[in-house]
Structures are given as C-alpha cells and as structure tokens.
Length: 281
Ligand SMILES: [Zn+2]
Image (cartoon, rainbow, N blue to C red; front, side, top):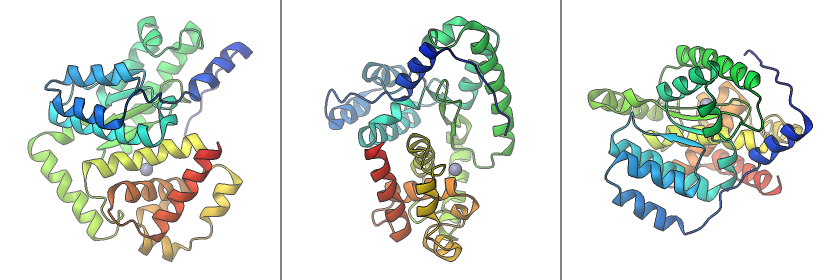
C-alpha cells in the first residue's frame, strides 16, 4: 500500500484531531429518524435527513434508487446510534463513482470540494490537491482487486474517508446474482452465519471503521486479544474469510453480531472487546 505524507502545522493538526474525534449528537430517538427514512419518497429527501442530522460531511445517493438509498440510510442510522464516534471517520457516503469524482476534483484543486468536506482550515491548497490525486489513484487500485464490491470503506487518513456502495450491484438481475453469491458464501462458511445480505456487507465495513476508531488491530492489547483464537476456531466458528487478517477477523465479527439473531462465541467475544475499547477510547 502506498503512503502519502502530509505536513500539517500544530493548529491544523489539532483541528484534524478534533475533526476525527467528532461524535454524533443525538437530537432525537433513532425511531424518529427511521420513521423519516420510511416516509421519504425521493433520494434527495433522504440526503437532506443525513445532512440535517450530521451523519457525514458529504452524502450523494444520486446513483441509487430510493429503495437502495433507504437501505443505506437505515444502515447508517443503526451504526451511528450505536457508535456515535463513527461520524468522525465517515466523511463521504455514496457511490464508488461519486467518490472517485470528488477526489478527482480535489486533485485538480477544486476548493468547493475542500469546503464541503470542512477541510479548508486543515489542508492548504497544495495538500488538498496532493490528497485528491493520491486518493484518486488509490481508488483505481482498490476497485481493481475487489470481487464482490457491494460496499467498501476507503480510509484516507480521516480527511476524506469514504463509506461506499456499488450502485451497479443493486440493479435488476445483478442484485439477484449478488444475493445468490452471498448466500452461497454464507452456507459454505466463507462468510459468517447470517451474513448473506446487502446490509451484512455494509456492517462488515462498519467493522473496519470501528477498528480504525479503536486502533484495535494495530494496538498490542488488541493483537494479544485476537491471538487467543486458533485458526480452527476462527475458520469454523466465524468464517474462512476472517482467517485472512486480524482486520478481517474484526470486520467479520461485527458483521455477524449486527446480522445474526444469535451471534456465535467468537463474534460475540470479539465484538464485546471492541465495544469495551470503544467506550474507554
Ligand atoms: Zn474487509
């Protein structure tokens, strides 16, 4: 993975830290938001809800049908109400294409994008351009390797992170094909129990976001906690995909807890530990 070094002044750094540590302010119960989501008939109305309540810096659901956009909004609401610190890490919500376009514009020096992200006092014009160019290249690399790309979390240092959904997957027969693959992958143990839906893939990505907030898999304590599980326990007790890295293990555990009505031991324990670190963070 390539890296981008950006020099920030002390005041810019403290603003970035404050931005990363933002928390969702619960002005009302989640039920009220769910109700508004159900009542909304257009994608624009859904975007307004996200903007009004401060779910993220930029939301662009124009690539989705109202049906898919409503699903995305429910996922966001559930995750943010349970983990309000998520809003500090999710800057852009929308399609892969929309995100790529945002980064392309930033790379070309578009200041409007920088302002929409609230980065104008954190990144100077040159830094914003460098970040846009870097992110644009990173996207191309990411999409190339993704097989089922229903959802993804693109981590750009908390300046311009993207919680992304693939709009092409939700159209017509492509959607049915994708669901068939997800069901097969759940049945053969590649993905955890209950994780065979559009939502479960998004919750897997939420797992990566929580990992980033808690610095779970990068901390000694987190690493040590995960080492207690043997490959056998992870492979048969969670999923085979969870064996690929500690990061995927955490994401699969979160996905199972959010998606299954009876999460199993490994998922429940990893999730409980993650919640504990989240609370003390
Ligand atoms: Zn993952």
